[in-house]
Every structure is written in C-alpha cells, then in structure tokens.
Length: 112
Image (cartoon, rainbow, N blue to C red; front, side, top):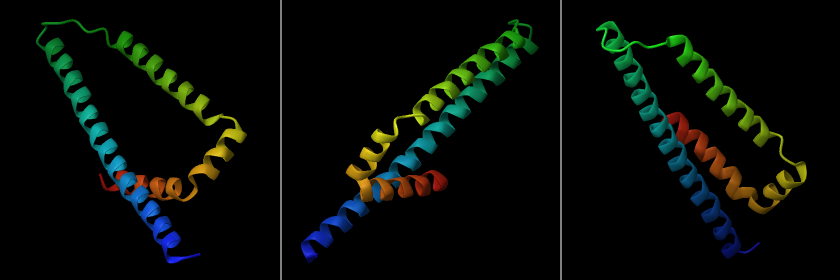
C-alpha cells in the first residue's frame, strides 16, 4: 500500500465522517423544529377550545395520529426487511465511507 492509496482512503473516510456529522446535526435540528411547531399548534388548538372559539374532537385527533404512527412503523419495518443480497452488496461497495459516515451521523445526531 503506497502513501497515495493511504491518503485516498483517509480522505474518503474523513470526508464521510464529516458529512455524517453534518447530516446528523441537521436532521436533529429539523426534528426539534418540527416538534416545536407541532407542540405550538396543539397548544393553540387547546387554547381555542378553552376560549370556546373552536370545538376539538380530541378522540378523533388521537385516532388519526395513531393511524399516522402505525403507517410510519409499517414503512420502517418494510425497509428493515430488505433482501440480504442487496445489503451485502451495499456494504461491499461503500465499506469504509459508509461506516465512517454512520459513525459521524450518530455523533452529529447526539450533539445536535
């Protein structure tokens, strides 16, 4: 292994790690912003109901949210149950960059 090959591997792994940190940090910020907006929206609905400006059927809202959560869970399960051949192919093609990017993503998500 020459110095050129080693520097290419290090730059690929380092670039993937840095990109993973940025993606994890950004995703966590977006999730926090979405949670704040959803919380303020629900607080606004509760306030409007308290002031008797609007009548909110909380049971129907709960049923709708359960349906959305169940749909997301089912979609996630379908992604997880992918073909093992495809998973093996992904790992062989992306090896070090994928590993370093996922490590960077985890760190960025925790620090975000």
